[in-house]
Length: 308
Image 1: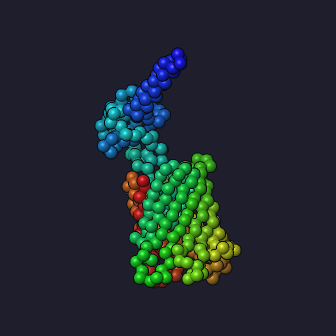
Image 2: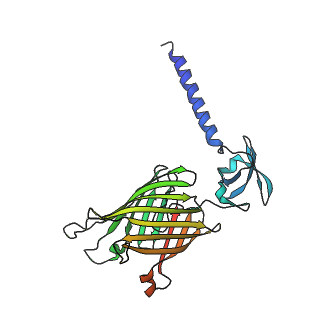
Image 3: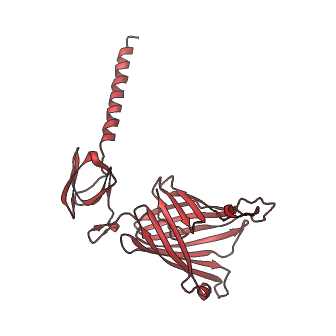
């Protein structure tokens, strides 16, 4: 019992240290390890951004040199976040915001992993919706559904949905590998519909960075648990031409649908992507010889993606 006051004092002392340490960490905005001369973007509490070359920092402020205002001293109390800008986002002395959508072309994925705890929402032609979340840096889980069935008066509407988990990682500089499963099915009861699901098992690799990359993939399709003998092939790419404009292409080679000697049927796409810090909008066209007979420019494709 004589030791109890000592224990109480020790517990109180530890609590004070813990609380003070927590408050200190909360009150200070510690930037990542930054070297003098590196380009940074400082996001303020009001949402505005200041970009420039890092000069120095201390307990109360961060100093950067900007192109427009010269040397600027920013109080830490006004800073929300400090990010080092990668070399790919510095063009002719100008700082580009990060590409909000380097993970997806039109429908297919790149192998560039989504940052941990990042979520996205994609809408294609209003009627197709999907949501994606990355619980870890290498895993991305996507699910989607169509709303045609909701608008249909038919009791036998299919109510299609799909799942698309993806795992990917960086192997070395500018080279990524990954794989995913695309599974499509219907909520219709099997007694009313013999369809039991279709999809593909895919492996792919990406070369490049978030602003310029190319991805090749190979996948085996299945219908009602029966796999195709030949693989599905895709070749996709994107090029960021300016801060807010990129070009994207996704091309599919489907097995056993054509009459050429290789037994593949090609569908090609080309489009423009409009960028903002959290949103990308695609206006593209799908085309081949058959489509061009009816629509020379190709069948239009419209989608947008929001990153959270």
